[in-house]
Image (spheres, rainbow, N blue to C red):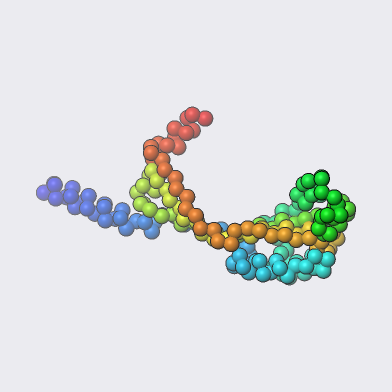
Length: 187
């Protein structure tokens, strides 16, 4: 009778653990209150016109310099970004960059970091739970924009980013839960 109980308990544990993949944690981050997709951010960004768009209009378009995920770039850093090669003549630079450099400290830049990302843990619950093997699928997008202004008028704009972020991160720890303890002892 004891062997029957042991087998039943083992079988029950196996069935329970096999169905536990949904218990793995998921996460998401939203650093873009204005836009739901990369394309929407790109379309809005294209509405920004140098020497015409004002900082008030930036807010209406969805690029509000007073919100989160915006970095104000000070003039010295801006010079190294916009004109990193001193061998290029001032006349050869984009007019907005040139005017910004000539305006010196009256010019500043806003760097917008907009993103939406979802992280889903996949794989075997027990291996993940005990830290032997963790697999995370990451999907989403990231849009970065640089807007240079003098006073309340945009002088220059540029953008980039990742329209389709789809990657998998795998972490393998042969010692499972003991792995992190050994790493902390060696440091």
